Every structure is written in structure tokens, then in C-alpha cells.
Picture 1 (cartoon, rainbow, N blue to C red):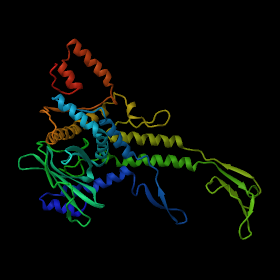
Picture 2 (picture 1 turned 180 degrees about the horizontal axis):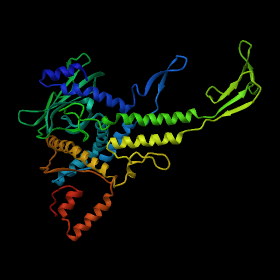
Picture 3 (picture 1 turned 45 degrees about the vertical axis):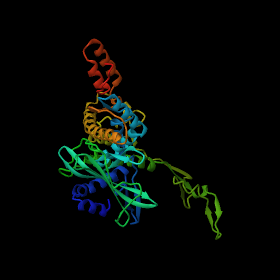
Picture 4 (picture 1 turned 30 degrees about the vertical axis):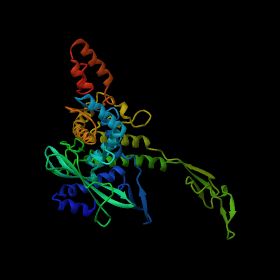
Length: 442
């Protein structure tokens, strides 16, 4: 984030200390997600003192963990329900038409990797449109917060105007009337404030609810005390991330180093003449490193050397590293276990009796529900501002799709049977599976 953006926020009376305390950790977590840095690309020295570059192979375990959490928590079957059916239907249409759930899953992936993400309302006043933009920790600057959460927040992104690259600062702050305002400031490459056509400096949203939702994994932030930022889901499992790639790299190196080597006598090679008239042997191919020439030798015309592979032991080490990674990242020891054909199990193969995984899913769903409810309430308020005729929404709830890790179809059938026998009311059933909605036909 540019220094002139920080200076602007400080001059506006806001502190950037929380951002500066978390920046080193966010950069570190980002490097692990992208599998870059000294662990993956380093220099080594051979027996003759020659320095050479080494690249460690990787399956990008940190990114894999975050992607799994994204797929477990959000998909297109997630529903935001309101007491008002009209509001619920309008929200469903809005989220579907703007591809919100696909982008939201990406936001969860980045938030679980970098510790923090956000959804924020964006308004096109000219075309009277409401949209939701998505941000990760590198773009989020909390402005005011307490133990209940972040009340005001800024988001910093890059934009282009007339071919010029600008830094755009959008501040979602409370106005004098208690409603949220969106203030937008743009800076050029020299840090000067510039006016961009069709960008309003300030818009009053009319929303009493936060016009953004902060996404954080349900992991305590042990890096910085009292920080509004969250902590990466793999922050305490970096050693496990390293062990997975160490075991994987060793396994592949074992296969590569264990290829059969064939030594051939000098007489087995055809001869050709070089440009200077010398006779030189014709090689088998520049990429062939398994055939070697025994110079001035006619004995043992062909010699083979095939070292014994230790892939079984290497595979066990790789499997153990995956199990430890899954356990430390809240997915359970069996989530990344290897099946009989050697592939990592997918989310649909996770057994419903994995209680540790289910507890962690419930905790993260509870944390995510607040962000989704906040941004949904703000979208409804801004929709009214843009001309949508919507009644009062009533209570808002989020229904997550847990069919990946448990048999929800069986639970649904069981609840329907309980309604038929009078053990469960129709209202309880609808609250469980469809959220609370008003319906004149009830």
C-alpha cells in the first residue's frame, strides 16, 4: 500500500498501526500460498565449489488447504434467507445475476490464507446499480473497531482512468445521521489527489448496517494482540507445509535419481568427424542422461546399474506429512489421506462422522455468517436507495450447504417425517431448511 494513502488516512484522523503490524505476516502467508521464497528457490554448492540454483518441487499445500476450506464453506447452494419472502427472492436473484457466490468462495480462500478478507457494497449511481466487491487482507484497512467487530473500514485497490494507473481509496464510514457513507479518493503515481470522471467523492447509502462484511477464519490471532485482522488458517502449521513439500520433493528426486544407468564401451558408439577433422562419438541425444561412455574400454561392453528405490518409505513420509497438515489446519488427520490408488481424497469422500472437521466447519460458518448477513442487509438498503420496492426484511439468516460432509438429504427426509408425526412443527422445519420467511399461505 502506497505511503501517500497511509498519509491521507492519518491526516483524516485514522490510525494505520493495525495495518503496519500485520503487513509482515500477511506477506509471509502470501508467499506460502504462492509457494515462493527461499525455501523453494535457493542456491547450493557441489563438491567442486560450484554454486547452482535449486528449485524445490511443490504441491502448493498452503493453497490447497485454503481451497478446501473455501469449497467446504461456500457454494452456489448457500442461501441468505429473510422473514420477507420478497426480500429473500430479490437477494437470491441479485446474488445469482452478479455471480456473488463464486467470487465469495474465492474471497474465503484468500481470507483463510491471508487471515482477512471482505465483501463491500459498491454503487453505480448513474445506472442505479448495486454491486458487491471482494477484497483480501492486502486491500483492507480497518478504521474503527472494538470487541464486537469492525465498524468503519477502508479498501485500497488499483484502477485505470484515461490510461493512467491510479490508487483508489474507498472509505466506508458512519455519517452524522448514523448511516454509512462511501467516500472515494484517487491518487496518481506521484501521490496527488486526482478527480476521475463519473466517480462521486461521497455517496450516502442510507444503510444503518455496515456496508461491508469482514471475513476471518475462526482462528485466534496470536501474532498481534487486539488486532482487527484475523490469522491465516495455516499460520501455526508452516512447518507442516514445509514437511509436505520436503517429502514430495524427496519422493520425486528418489524416482529421478533411481533411473537405470547404462555404461557402454567405447566401441559401441558410432564415430563422426567434427569441423576440425577430429573423430568424435555420436551421442544418443542431448537429453539422455542414462547412457554413459567408457573411454578406451573394450571389456564389459554393456554394464547396467539400477539402484533400489525407497519410494515405499518416501510415500509413508509423504502420507504422514499430509495427515499432520490436515490435523493442524482443522481438516482432520484423514482429510488429505492417500487412497489405494495414490490420490488425495476429495471433499465428497470425507466421512460424515469426522467430528473434528464438523466442529471446525460449524465454527467457521458462524464466523462467516456475520459477514454475509451484514453485506446482505446493506445490499437490501442500497437496493431501496437505487429504486427497488422492497418491504422490511425482518430477520436475516444464512443457510449453508453441508451435503459435502454430511448426508443432508437423509436429515431432510427425517425432519419431514417428524413434521408428519407432529414431533416437529412446520415453522421449525422451515427455519431449519429454508430460513424464516413470511408466507400468507401458512
